[in-house]
Amino acid sequence: VAGDALDLFPAEEKPLSVLAHRSRLNSKLTTNEMPPAPVKIERISGDRTRQNTFHKRKLGLIKKAIELTVLCDCDIAIIMRSGPTIMCPEGKLSAYCNKDLDSMIAEYMNEPPQEHY
Image 1 (tube, helix red, strand yellow):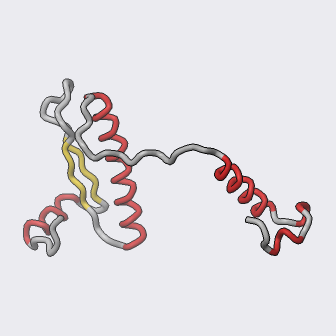
Image 2: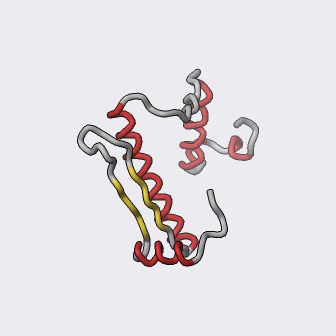
Image 3: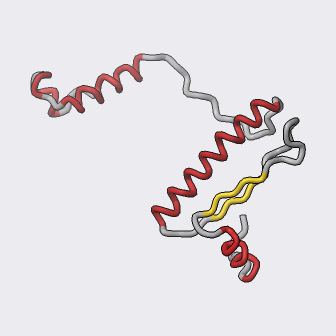
């Protein structure tokens, strides 16, 4: 990023954040690494890998749901069942709700949602 106003001053007088940003920018430009390949959305073949991925993504989904309830003051209920495993052939049922799950289900049954995904 040559030619900007900060280049007129000695390095000692530049803010540290600008210097740190420039060093990160320069290090990124000099490496010849490829960006990570996009993840293919298809069934994961290995049982252990599939369960680990499910667990990590489930936690990520719940984290995003919590953030959405805090930021937008909305109510969210998530119900999911994992795939079958050796230890649990019928899959494990889990849920997240920021208020009473039974009342959310009752609201859903009495008033069908306006949007389906």
